[in-house]
Length: 566
Image (cartoon, rainbow, N blue to C red):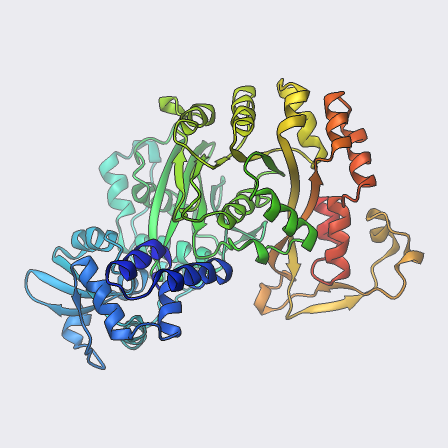
């Protein structure tokens, strides 16, 4: 309830003297610890009468509060809004006349609802505050879920009249393409493709044209899965529809383009980053899904070993130094940094981030998207940060010597700096900085810790099965079959829950390097990565492979996953 508006709810309680500062501080702490919204905590614990609380929310927003809702809404009114819009925006029509419509809103703070639906409905929109439980009930009763599958939509499209190009697409003008992309069946098909991807927690959606087919693939838990393919003749209408949503130039198919689509699914915002690429047989389009509701930002829920969790918690509370997370693209580095920032995201700490792009909006943190086109690079943002009186700085990635040098300067002048590097392991981060041109003595005096990580798939709990792995597979892990004793190994045999993949969800495996005095001495003396790694192992560091073995022996992941990623 009102998850994205914690500070607004806290200020509302202060302004109207609903709760004292001690209680508000306790609520904020519980919110950080559990992820439950402050508004839900207030209502669930009966700290404020429900009606009084929502009345104050309405008053603060200058909106009407509907306390006495009817058990149902007239069909003459609910028909004014489609099930798609009602569920996506979390609204229910309440009253309407020829020129305006009042909508009960699950998120009355979201002014984007007014902008979007004013354009869609061609009416003045007024939001009304009410008990979210009652709104959920009305949504359920009046708007059935649009659960038509992609297969069902594609099968129906064969019977519907859908215009698609029979001539060379290059002969079509912008108006022809826009008309094609605006057809009802195409709009519905694209909506279902996006909704299914988000429902399946896909991180990326791929639209791929080939000579005789057009493929759609979802990346789920790090692996690509092919969906039911539309006909090749639908490639141009589908990609054009996506480009329309992303405000890209639909007539330009010769150069790459980047854009963004903002959706509201189930009352929560979902961001899609769009990339188009011209290929031999048409445009390849990839959408990166940034779903605020699907990401886990509670560091205690990331599956870290206790010593790693305690180490990060201690590092981010330091007044200065550098903490680096390493790993390939898609290994969860940004999520780890966001989770670490959340530990220190308190009113007495100033946090600034420079990101490319800003993946998730976090309340209480000043987030800056870098823009290379106008010269706002990571280095330029960092220089400006130092004049903004920050306590903690996050830099999306240290890509060059200038960014590295400014990060070190910031850490040496009393700031904590968090960032990422692309290296295979934790000790490799040190030598990567040296290779960039950073003086070893500066690294030794500023770097506090490095965390290397990978994401491996979890075995599906519903089809997890014990088995005896072949000796060759154990040898790939570096394990002698004689040494395994009575340990059990598991795999997922496949079931409907996991779409017969055997896996459901992912977890992190970690390699934690804490900079000791002896390791700092090695860095100053330009020791190679292997020497630094050996010293860290002597001091108790577990490698990624070691942590992967922990997950295998706990029955959480499979041997194949750990062999693949370590």
